[in-house]
Length: 511
Ligand code: AMP
Image (cartoon, rainbow, N blue to C red):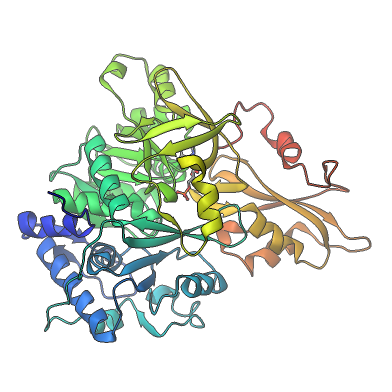
């Protein structure tokens, strides 16, 4: 028998088996009316009401529904229910500038746009055929009085979501995640992390980012409670771990650094000691951070590696039985590798040192971008753009980046996009943007600038110019001025030379 693997399976099971259980705990402090504690039955009922609302608007199967929102129970229910109706959810990064959001809404062809009330004033100029706030207006969109039209022919290869991600091009690319991608990711991720109905998962990861790594589906499938948190703050994370009995969280190394900092000032026992497991990805965590998480917090450290393009799970590094008797330093060293392939994934390294992957979690393609899709999937392997190696235990380690991308606080920044903006400053003759190692953010966006003859501009001028045109996290935090930039014979800026000064003494070129 062949039953299509669709993302609907997860919420359906939550409703059937765990209907009475609190499925979502909404953020209490938000501009929209908080939904409070919602049972899985209610999440599913509201999801159907949203589908019926979209029916009433005449949004057909295959059409896109975009949402720009901080983490919220409404965003969660949308991710769990919109794809189930055969429509495509497009969750957008809430940190982007209006022009960037506008580009994504336009490129995805979304007829519906939902906007978090907190972003309402900054995004007031961004429109779509139907536009709603995610508070009261969202509630009015819901139709509880009619059953939604069922998806006519559920298809596991249909696109469930499009997740825009910054890559090597100035414009973000839309990663087309199929239902099958989401299904395989959720089930294998859940299996490797041994998630169960006893878990309480807190969303320390932005849900827009690769659909919160697909974990909302995995958690719904096993009936685990999902706690929403909107703002990342170390002390608040500790408080809520305590309050909700959290057992599982995921995030970039910067999140755990914030928690470690807060823990240093925490009075009494650290909440969740010997109970919490964390999943870390986005950058290679320093082994010192790993050792500190285990010693100072008493939380289990797990690492995964993957990309938005891979749903994201490719490799996983869990503290296996063999590590139990290792000393803290050796254990942290083992856990600092990106991990071994998840079940169903094959990893390889090309002749040039690029990490390659084959898996059912790999994207179908980039939305309306056949050239980029062909390039990424050349020769039947997904080209990650990361440089690395595989050791004789089959574990992948990431040491370098082939693509011109900076990862700061877990978010991708396209160097080219920032260079374009720096270059648009009238005093700038040449510019190169690179990532340099930074304690807090992993990598810090840094612009190396040559000023035009007779022109003047300060570091603050260039930063202000960029902040006005780019999402804050993409703007350079540091600007250095040079008389010239090293170039190849063909005139290409030699970025690796610019990087060398900042990465000297490090055995890898990513952080
Ligand atoms: P994104 O598509 O925004 O999730 O970013 C994916 C990128 O994050 C990858 O291509 C890597 O460069 C980086 N990344 C993710 N996980 C890890 C990890 N465990 N170690 C090193 N880099 C990572």
